Image 1 (cartoon, one colour):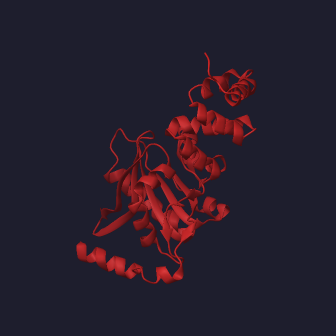
Image 2: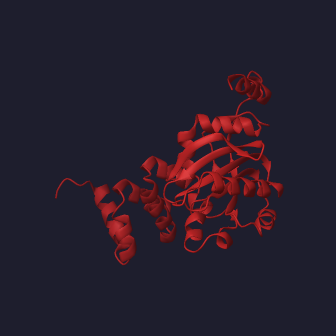
Image 3: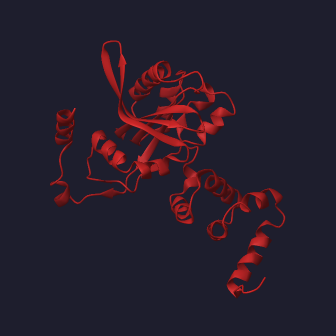
Amino acid sequence: MKGFSERNLNYMKLFYEEYKNDENLQQLVANLPWGHNLLLIEKFKDKEIRKIYAEATLENGWSRNVLSLQIDGKYHLRVGNSANNFSSTLPSPDSNLVNNVIKDPYIFDFITLRDGYKEKALEIAMINRIRDVLLELGNGFSFVGNQYKLTVGNDDYYIDLLFYHLKLRCYVVVELKANSFKPEYAGKMNFYLNAVNDMLKNEFDNPSIGLILCQEKDKLTAQYSLKGIDQPIGVSSYKITKFLPNDISKELPTEEDINLHIDIEE
């Protein structure tokens, strides 16, 4: 073979030296495109961290640009970091698998909201950018609906966001909170999961999973709130980095305007 630049030859030598004594990593990185490998070598000296990103890239089909964004967002520090009760409600290895699907925090930096937003505004923004939301949630999430109605007894209840995870083979109920986590949120999620398992889950589905997304959470408070609940629930925070200037946000509809518009359409 001919025509390699000096730079590429140096990269090849570096690649060889990095992995020549590690057969397990050799097999893993051999499945990645060359540009992905160079990015991981450039960004991380720790091979265990490289392994996390290599496995996630193959699992999620990340392009080099998406991989770069995930590195900037410190994916390796966020995956498996939620407050949850998975180990006590799911059998092993399912609990580990689910734990590695849920992240904390989630970063929705593609969403633009004005400061002081409420849950309805966040939900609408997520629906409008659902493709980006699915990318941040991770591979396997399929969107079922928002404000998904469940009728229990004589009352109607509405799930903020409902997903189905194709690999976990289960429904994922997501509740959005524009404030800090409160213990009562766990009880409401437990109710939703019981209803979904009874009304939607079929015999081939695994138990449904709940994810409560809050602006902030105290991990100990969340753990105490989930203790004793027999449904698998995770509590994660989220970050939104883009807020509209006040002079622009004043021209946008309020949450009441949005709710009125929705009521008229219904």
